[in-house]
Each structure stands twice: as structure tokens, then as C-alpha cells.
Image (cartoon, rainbow, N blue to C red; front, side):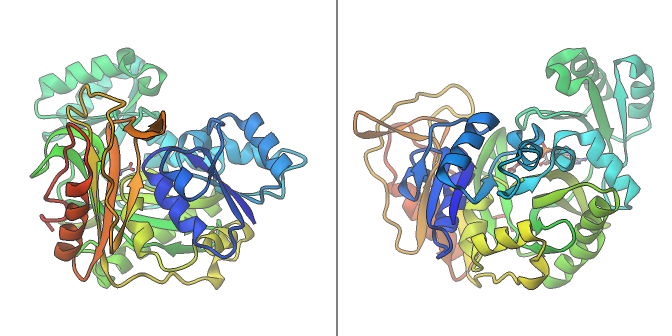
Length: 422
Ligand code: AMP
Ligand code: GLY
């Protein structure tokens, strides 16, 4: 089968690496892809949200499956576009309908969904600019810190956590005043939860589901989880506190009720569900849903997924996920991300990358790289992920770091403590 993968981030080279290993994958195209995806498939210069051009390409090339990496095309309705297209209805598009993608596209929708289905999450209320006094009153009923979330997609920047009521009022006013444009026309205010976070991933065909290896990501730039948020500095899988008992609780109280809730509400969802969880003293609760895989979690999850990903995707599209099991690699995997100096602030692009490791027991996934005049150069803040296996996470971290040390470009930075807090 010919497969088209959409996206161009750090997650897509990992998905591409895994898809390309399948004997069922005849040709792998990636639109638009990056220098990393070009190593395992054929990049096609079409934007992931240019549905018309994508549809023409799929039709002309006889593509049988489209795997959607990022959330944007899903929220914009790519699944609906293909299923309403006379000639492309048969194409297996892996991802939820626009309605299903609202689990990520609207925080208010996600919170309402969880409330309707009794899925554990933080207490909350949603307000618009006409109800600012009610919003301030609600804030006064909560204990600090205060959590404010723009309802819509904000490229990962829409969550603000502050320590005082005064700051919360100011942020609330700014958000409702258009800080994130239409995305913050409504603001979800919620109770602050404490605990360690864990990312759990499932695939669903709308009725059945399977759970993939879990992972934990590291968002802050500095070691010890200090400093500014980034697109992700690394990840580890498995997560030690995600024992079989804990995962059973997650499945019973979160994963199954989510899949059943979607079916009950008649929402078409055939794709990945990412459960951003926090392990509170009362047990696992949902911080957020995403309708796609995580980045940089995918860079460890794919290493630990032994099952053929194309087979899983086919089962998702055909409603046969109950016939599939998921086999996990017993080994640990750690991903260490090499980033440009200055990131997540201003940083240089086009810096030559003079060395890329060949990892004995791991894979290098390019993220922000490009070819310029035959030279490999940096093209983003997060440049290259070194993912490695180990018998345990310490061994995997050591191997991933050895890779990260070998990567050579001016200004390179990486964290040495991925997974060390667990
Ligand atoms: P999000 O953009 O929704 O992933 O949120 C960004 C980060 O904010 C999460 O990964 C958490 O670390 C934190 N966060 C969001 N909501 C809460 C909450 N209710 N309590 C504590 N931390 C939160
Ligand atoms: N690693 C978090 C995310 O992909 O949103």
C-alpha cells in the first residue's frame, strides 16, 4: 500500500521510521516532511492543510492510507474532507473527524465531554468577555496557583499558570481581550492539580481501542525542569509509576470511558488519542486530550512499539482493532533533543551540522534540519532527537546522551537529566 504521512515536526520522522518498517508499506510519502523524513520516504512539497492539493496527489498516486501527524489538519476537518470526497471515500485516513478533534481544538469541549462521562479531571468553568465578573468570582473560590486556558488552539502557548489573584485577573483580562485572538475569546479556569505527569496513547477505531507504550516528556529548557517551556527537550518510556495496576486504572476510568463516550455521542473518531495525565493523590486525572501523537513522546514510543504500525492503522480504519494486540519492547527508551543555542528565545538558523551520530542501539530523528547547497544545516529550534534503547532508563539515557554529545553544530544544547527524576 502507498502511504502518505502528513506533518514536518520531530514526531513525523519517528512515525515515518516506524511506518516504513512495515512489509505492508510499499511507498511512503511525507507532506511536507523534513530532512529526517526524506531519509525513510519521499517528501512531497504540499502543506499538511492544503486539502485540495493533497486530494489530487492521493488520487493521482493511488495512495491508500493517509496518516495525519499534527492536530491542525484534523481540527480543520481533513477526515471529513476525504470522507465527503466522491473519489476518495475509500482512502483510509487515520485521525478523528473535525468534531472528534475538538477534544484538542476546544478546551471547553474537552472539559464538558469529561464532565458528561465522569472522567476524572480538574474542576473548571468557562467564561467569555461578557462574564468577566463571574470569572473573577470563580477565581476567588479557588486556591492558588490559578490555571487559565485559552479555549482554542494556541500552538502550545495557551495555558497560563500564576500564583496570585491579581495576576490571574490581569491574565484573564488580557486573554479575553484578544491575547490569542479568537482562540482566547473563551477562557477555561480550572483547579490546579499536583502530581507527576504521564502521557498515555491509545488508538481507536471508534468502538475498540489499543493502548500504546506510555511516556513522559520534558518541556522546560533547563535541567531540573527549570526555565522556559519548549516544544520538548526529551522523553522517556516506560514511566516507572505507570505500573500494570496504574495503567488498568487509567484504562478503566479514562481510556474506555473516553472511547465509549465518543461512540455514545455519535462522534466519528478513528485515530490516535493522547491522554495528558497527572498522577494526583486521588489517582490519575486528565490535564488535556490531544487528537494526535505527542512530540517528543513519539520519539520513544515508536522505539518501544513492536507491533506493525501499518497493521494497527489498517485495523483502526477497518473497525477491527479488537483483532490486534500491542506488543511492547521490554527495553527502556530515552530521547534527548539537541536544540539551537538561545532556543526557545531567538536562535540562529542555517548553522552547519558537521556530525550526526550513528547509534548502535538507537535512532537519530531529525526535527529542525534542512539541506542547503548539499550541506546539512539547522532549520529550527529543536534540531535533532537522539533516541536510544537500554536495559533500563539509566542505560538508555547514557546511550542517548552519547548520541547527543556526538551531534555537532555551533551552539548545540541538550539536557542531561531526561528521566532522572522518575
Ligand atoms: P497544556 O498546554 O494543556 O498541555 O498545559 C501545559 C502544562 O500546564 C501541562 O503540561 C501541565 O504541566 C500544566 N497544567 C495544565 N493544567 C493544569 C492543572 N489543572 N493543574 C496543574 N498543572 C496544569
Ligand atoms: N509533548 C506534548 C505534546 O505533544 O503536546
